[in-house]
Figure 1: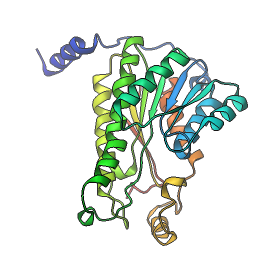
Figure 2 (figure 1 turned 45 degrees about the vertical axis):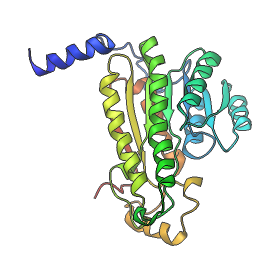
Figure 3 (figure 1 turned 180 degrees about the horizontal axis):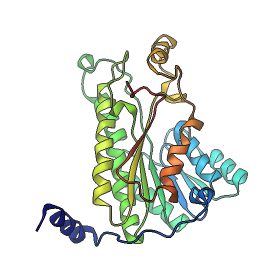
Figure 4 (figure 1 turned 90 degrees about the vertical axis):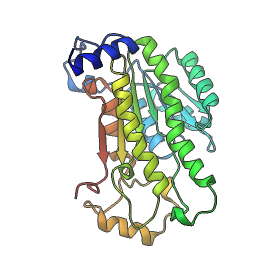
Length: 282
């Protein structure tokens, strides 16, 4: 038996036989990108990238579950629902708590009937500078627990729903920081977490090949609240390094998430889409 046959046999034993038939797809490209009839769930979606993705999915026709923790999102969910004529509800959850994650995903499945698309987007930056100068491990644990472990907790819980229904699309928000080391700021713990997310995504893409797709998006510097703590002096150095010479807008990012969520990407799994203004290109 060849090594590829051994691997296939192992996958079949773990998750069932691999799919052998291509899906029946719409012939119109715009229909391929439609999310009508689908349910999308996005963590960290009360602001920034997550909120932009939630709104984009609603514009594409999906019903949407918004996740928040410290920043309430009920009114934002109501606005999305009324503006785009979809169902949109907000859920409070600390994604670094696996029990909360499991309860929240179960509640969303109950409220919406299923989950077709899940975006593990919640995350926090590293703001403490050189890690060698930081006292204790509280800051490290906070970043790893939320940015890495929290994403895994979500994948583990929703993966069971995808496996049960035989399909699904899971999207991690990684970062260009998982590909390169940012300068001039020092953020080793954040970089390490995002690099781990990239490999977790690829690993789960193989594990879940029989029933779901797993991909990631790696944003560069995007204009959101998450970078409000950064001085204009530091940001000006970013602009000098970015080939396009500026930070990106959330609207310039959501197309990647829509592609990976939609039927336009049914042959895309284990991939990462970098949207960084060319930062990683040199």
